[in-house]
Image 1 (cartoon, rainbow, N blue to C red):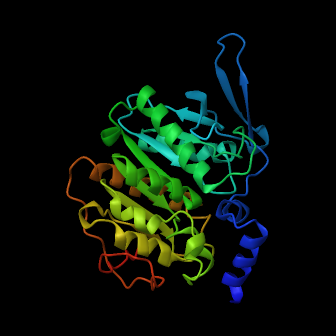
Image 2: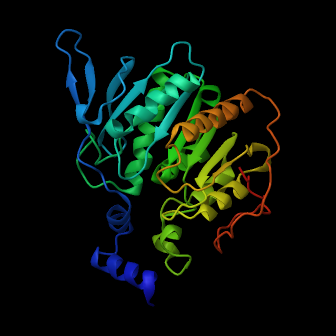
Amino acid sequence: MGGVPGTLLCFWCKGGCSTAKVAGALTFFPPEPNYSVSRDESTKKLKFVVNPDLEPIPFERTEVVILTTKKKRSICAVLYTAPGAKYTILYSHGNATDLGAMHDRYVGLVDNLRTNVLAYDYTGYGQSSQVVCTEADTYADIEAVYEWAIKNVCPSPAEQIILYGQSVGSGPTCFLGSKYEVAGVILHSPFLSGMRVLTESRALACLDIFPNINRIQKLKCPAMIIHGKEDQEVDWSHGVGLYNAIPDHFKRDPWWVPGRGHNNIVQGTAAVAEYYRRLNNFLGSLKGDTPPVPTVTTPPPVFAGTEASNPPVEATKS
C-alpha cells in the first residue's frame, strides 16, 4: 500500500495503533492564544480580553464561562448577546484559530443577524485545557456548551439554537445536529469526513474521523452549506456531497462561492454583504416560509463512497 494510505498506515502504527493520535496530529493546530481571561475584582465576573494587536472591534455584551466536559476537560466559552435575539448561533470554529482570532466574526454575526453567538474553544485551544485535542474531545466540548446554553440561554433548543460549523467545526456540528433537535445547521467549508480530505481511497476507512456524510442524513432541521468553488484544502465536492445527503425537505439554498477558497469566503466588502444577506435569508426560511428553489448548474464530481443516499442536486451558480 503506497501513497497517502501507506503513509497514514505507517503513522498509525508508529502512534501505537491509536486513531485518536493520528487524528490529533493531522487535524488540530491550535495557535498561541489570541486572548486572555481574568476575573474582574469589582464584579467577580470573568473578563474576555482579545489581544490588542488584532485591533478587535469593541464589544461589551459578552459573558465568559469555563465549562467542564464529560471527559473532565475545562473549556472556555463566550456568549455574545444581541438584545431581544430569537436565535443563538453555537459556533464551532476551524482548526487553526481560537476565540480571540474569531472575535470580529462573532461581533459581525451579532450586529448583522441580531442573534446571540455562543462560541467556544476546543480542548487544547486558547484558555481551554492544554492537552492534545481528539475527535472525542470535540464531541464532549460541544455537548458541554449545548447543555450550558439550554440551562442559561435557550430553554427551547429546537426553536432557538442554530449550529454553525466551519471547516473542522463541521465535525462536532454534524455530531450534535444528528443527536439533538435544533432550529438549524450551517456548514461553512465542511468535509465529508476527515480521511476523505486526504484520500479518496476507503482502504483505511477504519481510521476515519468526523463522518459528516453519515450524520448529515440524520438532521431534523433545515441546513445550509457554504463552500468556496476554488477551495484547495477541502474540495468543493465535499460541500456538494453533503448538500446532496441532506434530507430533501431540510435542504436550504446553498452558497457555492465563485473564486473563493477555504479561508477567504468572507473577505472584501461585497463578499461580507453577500454573506450576511444569505445568512439572513436562511434565518427567514426557519420561520416556516417556503424555501427558495436553488438556481442550478452542474456540480463537481463527488468522491466515490460518500454514502449519500439521495440523488445529486445541482449546485447554485452564483
